[in-house]
Image 1 (cartoon, rainbow, N blue to C red):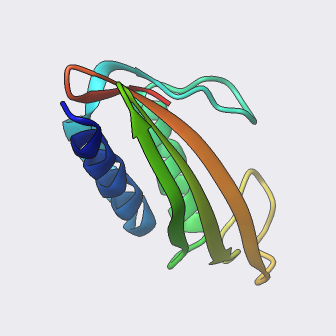
Image 2: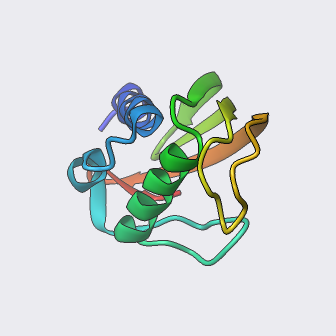
Length: 118
């Protein structure tokens, strides 16, 4: 797949993540997908689906803006700004009602048109 095609898949995943559509991962991720999580253990496709759902429960209506996206070869890199109000429990922390904002940096690797690694 082309760099542009890979970027389109990443955009679909980001958009789906915003609304909690975890089923898209079954379509776009390889069977042996791996997410190298900087704040916890690596996750497979089931694990990342669970993490996405947890974030949507904790920050319903959150918004992810991709500030930069670059692609070269089999990789896509993004820098995104994430904003949401903490309205649900997150890792045992009760809702604070406070707005949260953070920056996310991800590098995605594709194999045979499927997201294989993040």
